[in-house]
Image (cartoon, rainbow, N blue to C red; front, side):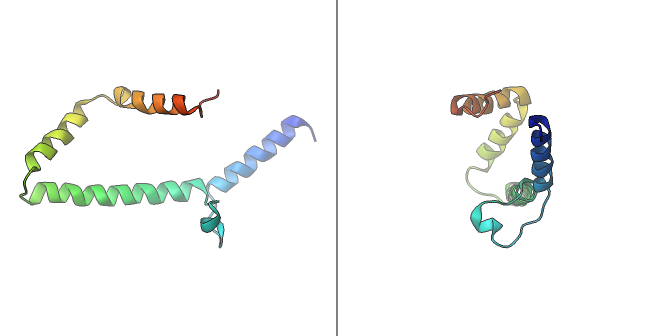
Length: 98
């Protein structure tokens, strides 16, 4: 088998592992496929943020105005500017070896 064929076979296997389900023992071994993990993380974040937004909108508590202003201030910052610190952290950690 040539090197190119071996690489494409590995790519196909990795693609199949992305969308696979969680089998017994995979969770404990840290071999859970990527897409289910991302789905769980996004679902958790959406539910927590929805509850926080509800509390901010409905309940009166000390510091409510400051939190609301901080949230609105961060929404004004353009997305490319928000990506700069993330890129720098990845660059300094050296996972970007392309």
